[in-house]
Image (cartoon, rainbow, N blue to C red):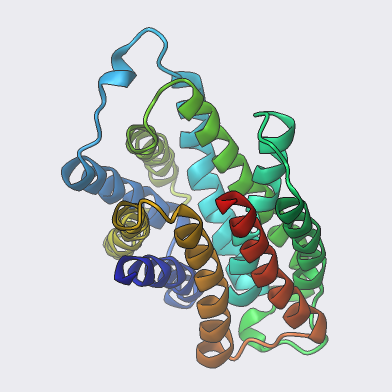
Length: 292
């Protein structure tokens, strides 16, 4: 269970880093770029995924390229959501992306629906409505400049992370192990993002800076730590995947809410708090349905 706690902490700390980035005047595109360099290297060294499946004629390179584009994009969207809507609502939106993944599992991948999963899906959709509601009085740190609405960014987080999960499932159906797919996607994402940063540097739009490299290394460490500890949690609880799934998602929602409110003074409305509670129940129901 300790691995699960570490995974939750890494996930929430990623949101904290994204929250603090604007205050440190970090260039998030550069930070995300270096994050994928470290994440891909650590994946190769510590996870040691078998890359043999990537050398076959049926390797899903198109899907992996799609992941390489989507992963850094959703990271940047998440960074914007955290600064606009706060950690509390952004983390809930990220975790409730499993609702769209669940719908895809029913409609596209032929997974069997049961009452627990459907109940969790219904409650989760209500939770999305609740967390999207904007509090009337929000702390300055959680408000977008010029009063920009936060819900479009929350919606983008919700859809974006579900899209990543769906693409990973498609890659898995090709026979490619998930760790090999992630490692390849991280490497491709770094190459694509590095090309973009070199162009921005050459054009004078955003010169490369060492502080972004340092922040990117920290982000990559937390990003990889989240994955590593989650994998280790599954390995140490092989007969309880639903427990790991529920513990991870509910843990991030609850700890993220505590950090957002206590550390950053984020304000939440009654609807936001109702949505957060519904999210916890929804995740629990889906996990229970999965275990059954």
